[in-house]
Length: 158
Image (tube, rainbow, N blue to C red; front, side, top):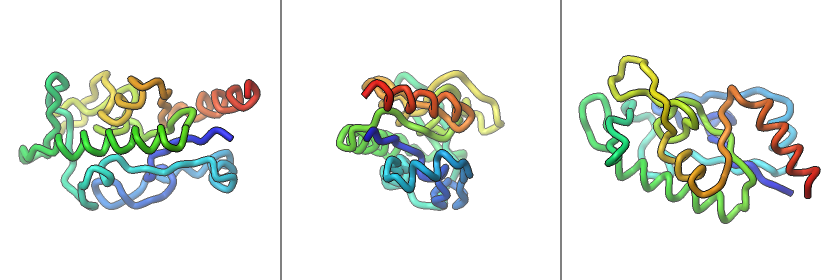
């Protein structure tokens, strides 16, 4: 049985920076959870950041720099969380991941640009990037139908 890594906030865990969740109420996700297919992670919590915490955005990708609005460097925590997330994904032998869009950790396509003004840039978050670079496809909550199709194809091929 293939497992799916999933951002804990999407499953209702109150681990967002503001102490809230991003619950995705979807019957397939509920079924997968009941079947024990989901491996829930919050890379930022795994990296040692508290909840709630100040919002953070990626200021620079090369070299990576992630700061809070007041300039506190939280890059080490984000990198530690990304590494731990990858280890968990590998240990659990996940086929793919469902992660929160636009997050500086979990965004797979776009993240906020570092200006704290709501502007987006095309780049992955650090945890999503770590998974992608290690061959684990990452989907976001707006790509749920693509994820479901991918998982079904993996199951049929097995």
